[in-house]
Structure formats: C-alpha cells, structure tokens
Length: 198
Length: 95
Image (cartoon, rainbow over all chains, first blue to last red):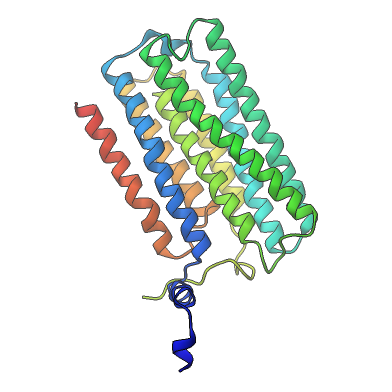
C-alpha cells in the first residue's frame, strides 16, 4: 500500500540515488554532452577549412596574447574548484573570494578576446572577409559567448552565496555552475590547440 | 552495479590534488607555447600538441569536474559524444 502511494518521480529519484546519480547533475552532464556536439560541428568545420583550404590569414593570429588568455582561463578553473571546495567545508568567505576572482578572470579573458577581435578587424580579417575569418570568428565567438554566460552565472552564484545561500550541506548549485565553467575551459583547451598551435 | 553516492551533500573524504593538477596544466601550456616557436618538424609538434591537449582536457574533466570519483554513468554521458566528435572530425578531414 505504501509503495502505491509513491509518485513516479519519487521512484525515479530513488532509482537515480541507487546508481549514485543526482538528477540535477545528470541533467547538467546531458546538457554538456549536447554542447560537445554543438562545438563539435564548429570545430569540424574549422578543421576542414584549415586542412583542406589553408589560409595565409592564420599567420596573423597572436599566439602569445592568446597564450596569456589561456593561462587566465586555466587559473579561473582552479579558482572555481577552490570555491567549491571552500563551500563544501563551510568556509563562506573563501567561497565568495574565489568566486569573485573567477569573475575577474572571466572578464579578463573576454577583454583579451575583445582586444584580439578588434586587432584582427583592423588588419582586415573579419567575419565575412574569408572562409577562415568566418569559421574563426564563429567558433571563438560562440566560445566567448559561453564565457560571458559563465561570468553572469558566477555573478548570480556570488550574490546568492553572499545572501546566505549554499552551505557545507547544500552546494549542488555551485557544483553545477562549476561543471559548466570547467567545460568551457576544456573547450578552450581544444580550441587553443586546433586554432592557434597546430 | 551500484555507483558511488552523489556528492550533493556532505564533504569529500580525501583532499583533492587541485594545486598539483593546476601546476601541470600551467606547465603543459607553457611547454606548448615554447614548442610553438621551436623548429621541430610539424608532424612531431602536432603529435605533441594533441597529446598535451588530451592530457590537459583529461585532467580538468577527471579532477576539476570530479569524474574520477563520481558515478561512472556521468562519464558515459560525456564520453559518447566526445568519441562521436573525434569520429566526425576524422570524417571531415577525409572528405
């Protein structure tokens, strides 16, 4: 009789827990899986043009500037994971501080990318100038858009945390944000190699 | 088979090596930048770049995204499209 009173969603929730799964986190991983396919299409397009239609404009890219930006994004991933570790231990001050640094680093990355885009436009490489320009700006632009969404998400998480939200017993919201941020970092690790190094 | 419990509540049992992982990420990126301006052959450089990329991405996913100690089912969700992506890129290069 008591089994019959359980709702379908409660049964599903229980089944997920038995497998060691959290439904929110699983949902985030499915979203990230869809993002892999999204960026996969753009990366495949860029790679196709790069290999089969080599463009001299590629030499105009500033590897050193982008290398610095890469360090910035890697550091931001470190501060995000330290932020999560801090709230897991109930250290709200450290949690907020690391999240604040993450926001600054995210904005720094976007500023570096903005500077790069402006420099390339001044040199004549635009979204519509060549195949390389189109695939380059689409790919890096969408990644930048993801970083911007991440920065906004980090600000919202910071504000919620400052108002007492999240604790050592409830940090899933921070963990979900972290998954998104690290994924965007992983995408950049791939883009840095595909676009600038190879 | 029962996976590990979800980590939405409670603290993790062992301190994670975040600092060491970050150091490896930084050193690998620095090595890539040095390599980019070296006179090594393009084939060798590309191979090393791809190897380092896999290493860096793997470290972030395993440690920062906690796939190393979370349920393996999360890994399956993300690995399937990642393998498909590699297949698509190889297919694209073959056309």
